[in-house]
Length: 266
Image (cartoon, rainbow, N blue to C red; front, side):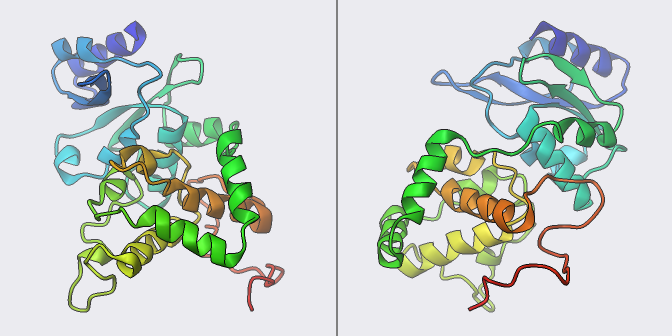
């Protein structure tokens, strides 16, 4: 995208920002994250349909923040992630400039995060048809059948935590699974340990997941762990009217209202 390369070069030359986070050619016809710190390196930036990595994962990293003000090439999922991270006080206008990439692959430069929030609210989070079919199939199963489905799907997991590394919302410096005194989640990769890890992570993402599929794309075994998050997104829509990340306001999982439904309590 020539427009993106040109603007990145201008921002670096003027020292408006210190690093541009974008995509470059990787190996095996895949793309990877690129951190551009010199104007002449902006020519390496690319954008096409292969650029699905959620770059918002990097903006909370201390080694990236230490470089100074960042600019980021942001698709709709990346922009949603940025707004959720801003809500959680992880990023702000002071250290981030958003170079939005529209669904038509046009470049949009936002003056602040409020503009980003206004823009992304034009696009609802929608589960696509193929995943909806899978969710409907799971919903039609008995409890025993669903239990077997997830035990079978999660059994190959060897806890490489690629899903955690790919998720912009998993920014804790030390995760629950890294504690051993006390040990909350079993370390070994066995039936119970795998189930507890993935359920715990899905619950932590309730009301925060922006449906980028980064976790499933990163899994080396192709485990459909994003189905758990999509199920919770559907539940949020059904019971609480849906979810869109906001800069300020009530959070889905931290706000009580007297008229909240309680039919989930058994």
